[in-house]
Length: 375
Figure 1: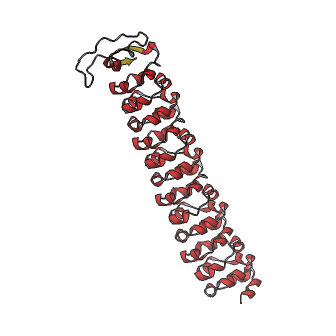
Figure 2: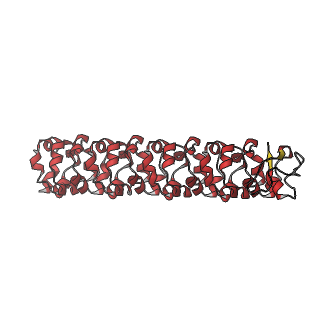
Figure 3: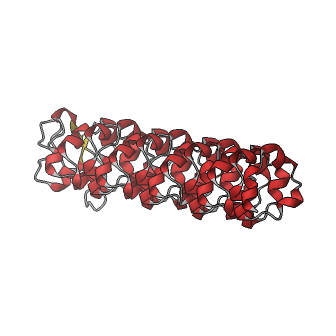
């Protein structure tokens, strides 16, 4: 009877033959005193029927020897009550075979104490069903060892609740495989702390879906490492919200690949700080779509480096608002280029006054105004 089980001690428990365990029921397991559980061995655990697992209590799990957990099978793990999971420690969790971990439910994962998460290894993480990860809490995610996260796959990352993403640490983000990043949602990316964003690697950024960038906050954009931005593509850059562009730093702008610049839109470009504009390279300016220049502010245009201004083409110059052109110091105006411009009937430029205040840019001739260049 269950009440008789209350008298068991560890030595008595240890003497029970495995075949005897097959007859245990939940009531008998629940009646065992916690200290008796220290006598369990792997063979005994392996012989317990799944139905008996429903009787386990947290205090009992807490004193079981870690080696005993190596014998748990999926059906037994599946039958453990969520409240019993609160008794797990890292050493016990570490002993669970990956195939047993594959039976975890969201409720069981959510009930594990944060300190137990340190016991997870890559093989166990890789075996977790995606739906189980939906039960993970921020404190639990933050306690996972970085090495364990190398086992995560895209489906698992996609199942993590945005609230849990707030606990990601830089070392953890750096350990995630690039292919796992391909399913990050805007809500998940928007929830990551800036410190974690600062650990992004180029391969991870390259794998991020464009739509995820739409939720990025200014502090997150400002934390992106320049080397990670070197792989950004036009669709990813074009998805960034304009308010986030204000956080771009000169080193970040300088790291952007020229081909990414085609993703800029006028609203984003207008939000860039002059300090970031000052880092543009000629190859980047050459790739910018003409329409973005229509939103350029005087302070931005004045901050553009001379070498970058020399890369402007007629369509880009023609899109600049007069007030932006007027902000260019007179000393930087030199002459109009002598070459055939697209759509022009003239093979050589008409005369434009060189280096004299802003006479060139204020010329009544639109064609002359578009041909003004800088040194």
